Image (cartoon, rainbow, N blue to C red; front, side, top):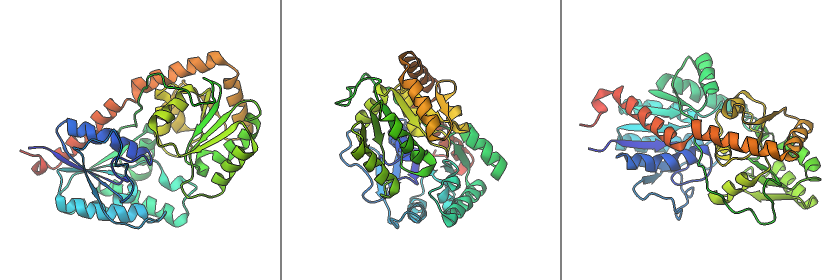
Length: 373
């Protein structure tokens, strides 16, 4: 008899929205291949039906909810957990602490749970006081009700021990190595500066855009990302692309090969994320050898180790660090080699998926009556 797992809390399968969705695109087929019956819950209109990587053996279910910035996670989480509680899988893998409020539904149905807590969502500048309070409440509920908590970085795990008295399992994100890919037309290998990020304040986008005005006088700058909601940071990106011939704004890039190629050939990839743990974009950039300049945070140092350049969060410091790297081909190639090696050693998808499967199996053993015969 197959073991069954429900995966909840993402936009669905296959989706390219963010790190959770990337993890599900890797994990769901892995579990199917390992003999699991896999159901992924999602939101209407959020998946890529014609994705060539789609595994038809993964069952998908969509449930209703409110498509608003502040209520989507809570409402879609509630309806998906209600549906899963009726279907009663052997174990549930849940993403996002906002879904911690609904864990008692799983408890009532005796469904073991594994929950990836993500980063410290309540520290993100994009959320107002009410939303931050909701996330903190969800974290407290998660700490109380979940069977196994998953932390994507050791620093996040330390914070949860200190703030919520909760331990769990460390499972980071993975990255895919890639063969040599073609250059984006109009660019040269190691000849451009790249940023890939959602346009939100905690990703240092405003100060990076300030730096672009100086960097664009010497090197091409490629901007990948958007806010998803419009707003001043998207307006700033559009203005930079209009005023500087060397600035290209590509918006959100869904094509994986194109994005990997941009990272692979970049002369300097700027990673300005300041909140959260192991960032999926950073790990993927490392896997394809992007020489990286990162904002100096505990999380970024944990992931990069000695394989990156770290900078203070000011436009002048960013300009200096990126200029030094762009002017030093030997350093570019050394960092490219070092980040790829570190990604292979520590952040491979194969080891990540194995760790998730072990966590699911461990959660099932906490409730012996749920283990299939």
